[in-house]
Image 1 (cartoon, rainbow, N blue to C red):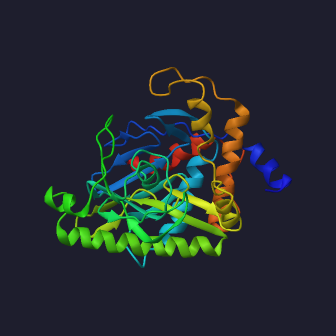
Image 2 (cartoon, rainbow, N blue to C red):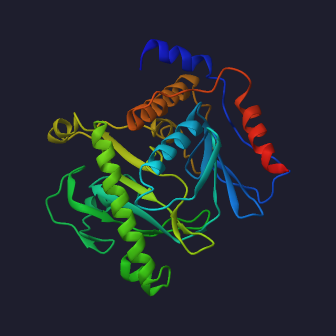
Length: 327
């Protein structure tokens, strides 16, 4: 990022959206990152804040994060709408999307093209533990960390209730439990693999590797399957730099990535983040993370990031956009 760009960002570094609560709007649901409203006419308003969540709690706010995530998702939704319809109706503000209210399917779809991941349900974690049969797939012996799989695979998990952990599932388990019908599973699987292929192709054009990603699907009032939430953002996906991938793999190193977990690692090194109070996160670390998100936006979309103007406050502008729906 050029010095001029960083100076422009610094002028708006104070523009942080912590929350967007309008008591006049119905159906408020506060997620860890998004503030949502359900309107009587079947629309849902989703406000993507600048809150950063990890360890089942909000750690801090990162300037520009909400706008970055909303902007990347918009860019990706527009480039995949021919493959699967999505929930989007309008974007009244860079942090806001208005969509159709969906009945979210109880299965989270993760598509993986590489042996990667850090969570207990990731294929790399399971593979390192000696598992070869996982999610209804059998992986061969002899794979190395971050190696490409022969073909992308779907690794579905249950959508856990608050406080619980996602559970790995197979196609047979999904059907046996009645989580999805056979027709729904086939439709979701085909859509997810097609979306991932498109996402990988778009990433390749930008000198990136889309290693894996998460999709959420829902059913609208007419019974149409639609993409929900976000798509191909650095929070829902794993991106690597393509030009250094082979060299780092040969050296046994992790690929160059958008290190969105820098704050997570800093906190985990200083406390038990599930139990202890969170220490004050240094301002320099928060700013470094903000620049990482902006860099991700520019590298993924190929567009220059346009930060919020220094005045008026972004909170004021978001609330003004929401007031239109208050009647």
